[in-house]
Amino acid sequence: MRIKDIFFFDKVISTQILAREFISYKRDLMIVANEQEGGYGRYQRPWYSPVGGLYFSLLLNLEDREIFSLFDILFHILRSIVLACEETFSLKRKLQIKWPNDIYYEDRKLSGILAEKYNLSLICGCGMNLNNDKFPKELSNAISLKEILKREISSFEKFIFMENILKRLNYEKVNKRELLNFLKERNYLKDKKIKVLLPSKEEIIGVCEDIDDDYSLILEKGIKILSGEVEKIFL
Ligand code: BTN
Image (cartoon, rainbow, N blue to C red; front, side, top):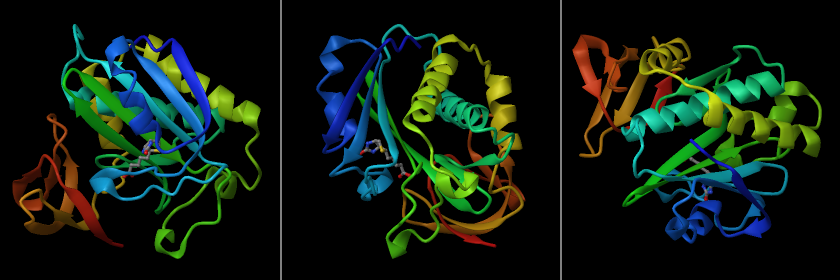
C-alpha cells in the first residue's frame, strides 16, 4: 500500500462517509477524526465515538493491485493494527482476533474494523478505545487501552501508534502463509462454543476448531463458514 496522505479532522459524522468523497482522487489515504457523530460498524450498528478514541478510515484504490482478495487486504490491515498496537504499547502477544473483524484483549473488545467496497475502492475503518473508558451499558464487553495499561494514552503515543500502523501497511511484505498463521495463532474463538448467524439468517452452533486457508471459520464436524456474525460465545 502507499498511504502517504493523512487528513486529520476534529469532529465528523463518520470517517467512512467522509472517505467516500475522496474516491475520485484514486490515491490511498487515511482519514482520522477525534470524534464521530454518526460512526457506524458492521450491520450499520452505531459505533460509540466520543473524544478519546481512535477513529480512522483507510481509502484504498484497488486498481492494479497485486493482492486482490478483499480478505487478504482486510486481514493484512487487521494484523498491522494488532502488531502496531502491541509494539507501541508494549503488549506483547496479548491481543487476539475475533473472526472476522474484532480485536480482543482477554474476553473484551478493544477495537472493531469495518470494510466497505465501492467499485474499485475499499474503505476500511477502524475504531479503537484508547482513553474513552466510560461505555454505555449495552457495551459492557468493551475495554479501552487506558483500562488495560492503567494510565492515559498521550496524543504523542496515539500519533506514534498511527505511524506504526502505516509503516507496516506501507513497507511490510506479508505473504499469505504468514498472514494465515497469524490469524490461526491469534484466533480468539478457537476451542470455544459459538453461535454464528449466517447471511441466510440460519444459525449454527458449534465449537470453533480453526481458520481455513480461504479465511473461513472451521467448526467441528468440518462445517465451514465464509461469512457470518458470531452472535454468542458460550464462555
Ligand atoms: C465493528 O466492530 O462493527 C466495526 C466498527 C468500525 C468503526 C470505525 S470508527 C472509524 C470508521 N468510521 C466509522 O463510522 N466506522 C469506522
